Amino acid sequence: MTAHPPFKGRKNATTVTAERAARIICKTPPDLSGRTTIAGYAIDSASANTPMDRDDAVALEYKIDPVHGKVAILHITIADVAASSPHGVHKEPNPTLAALDQDAQTNGETMYFNFGISPMLPETMQNRLSLENGKERPGLTISVTLDQDANIVHTEFSRTRISAHCKSYQDASKDINVHAHPLQQLSVVAKHVLKKKSSVTDLPHYDPLTGMYTDSEGNQRHINTDEL
Image (tube, rainbow, N blue to C red; front, side, top):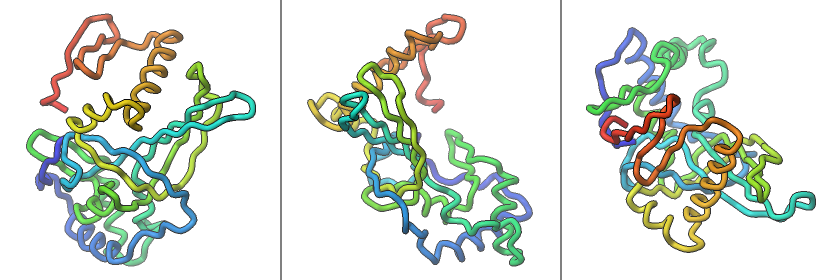
């Protein structure tokens, strides 16, 4: 994901009012009470301190399970968008706040172009939700427990407060080659899971280092990173 400036081309009748509502809501910090604290790596094409809409992070830990022995727990976290919006905002009698939900429903998703971003939410709120280096943000986490054969033995969902270590692809690629680095361990587990998955399904081949992959018809192709 490349750090692009917001694209102002998508507007609708509630956009200006939604931007005003976002500024009102963002005056109050999101409530992080009752959430499990977790750290993770957010990796993308930008440097750690470049503002952009990072919305996911990964982390890994090992534990000894009384049944399965040594297990790996993979934590995958996404930014909790709903945590920064009042519950039932679409029923909000205040038309300014109600416009925020109406605008998001109209947009449907954040759209990425090579010339910029057309965000689903107002830029003010999107910046507040993005995972920033070393700053806590509300998150939703799925924790997947894998045994030594990469079988899934347990999954758990939780509301978390995520503190992200943001890295560029370039920096992360160096860390992957450092023995015992968390990203190196994540890479090992990812390869193990991919090998396991490939053995039981018709998963097309994908090599993240070269960008080569096979499509569903078995044709070998190369990902054009300029289009990502």
